[in-house]
Image 1 (cartoon, rainbow, N blue to C red):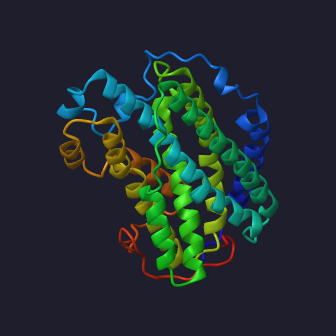
Image 2: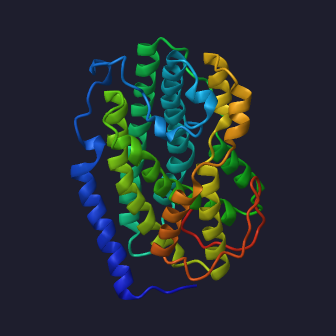
Image 3: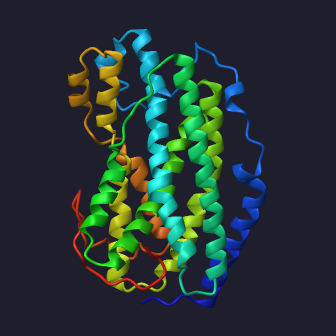
Length: 325
């Protein structure tokens, strides 16, 4: 078990205090949110940044009609928001609740509860924003809403938790996936948040979400610093492995959702497009961010010796209290 110095303790405490102070003035939940239904809709603008499509350079996409492309970009906005809703509800919210209900036994106990309860409020607003913005585009484009639930990150998390043989595994799995997700989503949001050529509502919702998530990345990083101080070397190794494995799942291209969309819009050569695209996105970009997270929270002393399978994990350690069910 690693002991932090007083200066490290003070640093974590000061940052948590700073983050909760910033939340009061910067968080979207504390601001006036526009009535999205009243925002002007421009049918000539795309609803999603084309550069983020995993198949953007494929011949089938390049040769598709403008009508199909427009519908696909609208559904890309739908996929993005549905995945966001699942991440907020099924991944981040339970991790916030863990810390709120059974915080680590540290002098920062009350601060950890504060920042996590603030993040929980943010996630509820982000979910509502996604629901409203998604339905706005469906309505304006006269499209049937996408009904899809089988997102790979969430599915993998469920299977990972089901494979855990002890409560300590479930605790670290939940917290590790949430920590990685809150870091990774800032990278994903950045492009859309800076793209003012897309539909105004899409730009505004993503920009607002991104501002909160940049803060959440720090919240989870400094909370992790507090949590891991009480972990054994085996526990730290397991936590590190969970964070790294999350990158692969987070960056999955969600081709199941796209197969559904292509069927709905009548995309020509859809099967070939799905086949050629593959599951993996630009993983290296996200890997760099997660490695910086691992270094920042003090887990970069050595490579993880634990290899987690895609849909299961073996037991390797014991966890101390602090991240609960």
